[in-house]
Length: 162
Image 1: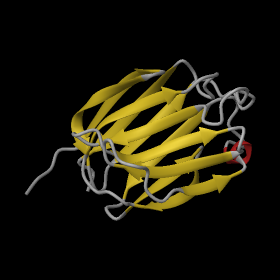
Image 2 (image 1 turned 120 degrees about the vertical axis):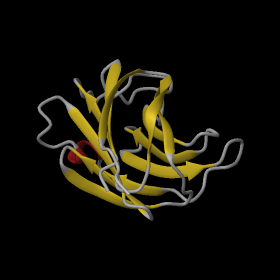
Image 3 (image 1 turned 90 degrees about the vertical axis):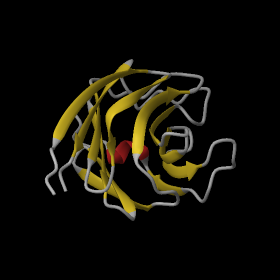
């Protein structure tokens, strides 16, 4: 059996999602690139910015929320119209972006049973999957207030690598 690897690039505006040309599954990678990083964007809302990996039915396979007022990054999952599952947190948001030169890169490696989340080339968590399935879309959401990222984030998927 032969697989073809592919690289696809998507521009995602804040508040939107995009459907992927090919699903991201075990062995594949999604990287989000931001041309700006604003770690003082915390005024007004505890949950400023989120990057999400979604399944075909809208399930949040991986929700990465950057909450500056709480100084944490929250990782979670949930089915549509259901409560959030057990969240995992990484504290000290600013320290996760050390050496970023005003830019940000968030990479998610799908290892089958877990997601490895890397921020600016440093692993911040091995998130055990609470819900499995192929990622068919990605989203970039901003609640009230200012995003920590640029207005448009570039998402790059690397599929068929395994």
